[in-house]
Length: 514
Image 1 (tube, one colour):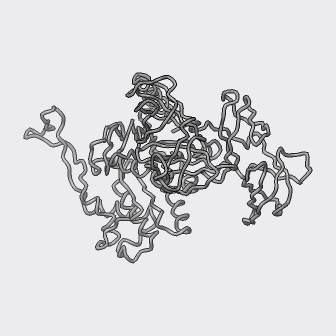
Image 2 (cartoon, rainbow, N blue to C red):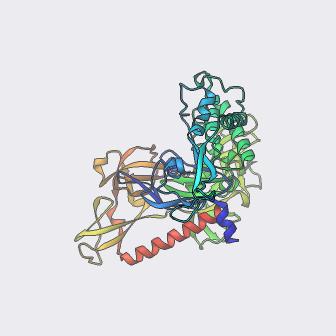
Image 3 (cartoon, one colour):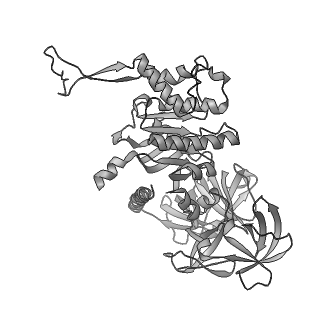
């Protein structure tokens, strides 16, 4: 069984990190991709998905870690020697060549095996390593013509070989780029936002064409996109990325129905994300009400995030015995076959999708069945940092010096773990008013407040819960309430043990999900 699993893995990324100018873009990432799989790397701009694809292609080299294709270490191998081809959003066609010559370009440079070289006696010649010396040759004109015509037929352009590429539409040019990538018969086709430059109608058509090509060819497709619908529609498996890390791997339906955390739930489709308390197995409390659910295995009274999709909320008339919550309709928009409504309940604004209409101002009851609630572990419940005691009542972390109550009389220079609750962090419009500067990288609305993530100038993340709405990339100052900081000494040994455990757990989880 283990031998079979090894054969099925066409790509393995092991503990790969990529750093640009002291900024970590990919952070100790592990990923296995099966032979014949259509896998999509999905995430917002800057999450590291294109960097990961370019390292697989060979256009970039990891700062650390190894990449294997077909069981061979290709980490330091140039792109042209790898059994992969890449299709880019910008088609990179040669404007001075017609369609046929664009597709044939790679074939004219490629050499193929031509059997064993023979010595003077007619026997296979051996090299210094004792292995047979192989001859290579270029493709013949007839072979090139056959392969190019087959590739053009595959993308529906069999009659376009003589055409000038500049006379083609955007969709047709993209088909030429795909044909050029497929003509050399790669084991893996890498596609970096290939449909991003097309209009909506053409993009939908090309999605269908790519899925058809994948079925017919049977080779591995690795596809990069920031479009959630595109990823869910086309893929066998989706890898959701954020901040250079994998947040979840799984089949599209599983990721939609069972997101691993609030980021995935928010990024994949419409969602209502709330904070709650897991009272016990299959019972969660939020908005002051207990709800039956199907999740278990959480600690008693553990703080959790939960997601309820808009289509899983049922609307009942005011006074009905059905439903668990009372609400007021704030808005209702007809979407063709259903209505999208904003309904306020206990201070939370639910997004609801229903075939039944309710008018703004109308009182209703809301019902959520157990299978409509999905419980998620919180990505983080407090901010934790590594720091160092810098004075009698000061600690340095995240590039700043913060005051705290040094009741344990920790000595200057002591390495420590610093714990900062979300409610101890304040974001300020003027970064000079804060202890450190940062950029807003994520804003997650949780109904009654926003959970905001910021990335400091020293490459650290702060989370805070706030009533204020911040936009992506806003520049802010970070201020911390010193009375809420907790500091405790740490040892290097405990850090290393934890790191090893986290790496092993991540690798095992990715293996299972992929």
